[in-house]
Image (cartoon, rainbow, N blue to C red; front, side, top):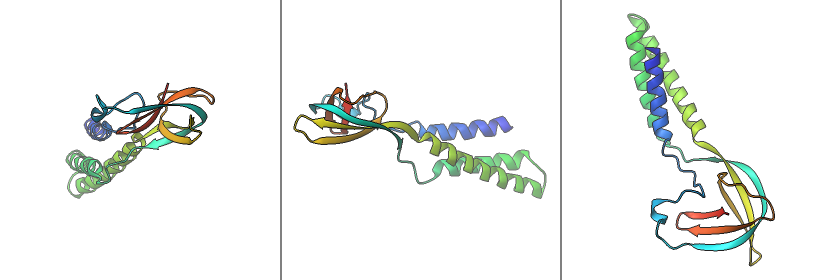
Length: 153
């Protein structure tokens, strides 16, 4: 029964985090396909590692569902009489807590902050996932689309 509880908890957390979009320079949004954007040449001035945190579902729905399922299964499989209610409350609280922490950890991704100098002399900073690596002095393309600005080779 422990395996069932664990499986339900993991499935609910992963399904909630599966749609997290971190804005990769290698991925285009559906509304950017076959649309004009602009491209400028630029030179990398500096880069640094960052952490990107995706916007989370603040409703807590995943944690509530996990807590409810954990409480129900805990009360059905552990203890008798009043013990089963205590077991249900404890497993429900634990399931909700674990679900919240796992969801929080999965909503973070390593990223890179890139400062580039455009041909006009203006500096621009772009934060994006670290799908591509850049070094200072490298010539890059600054791509602007309706979903934002990205740096690419």
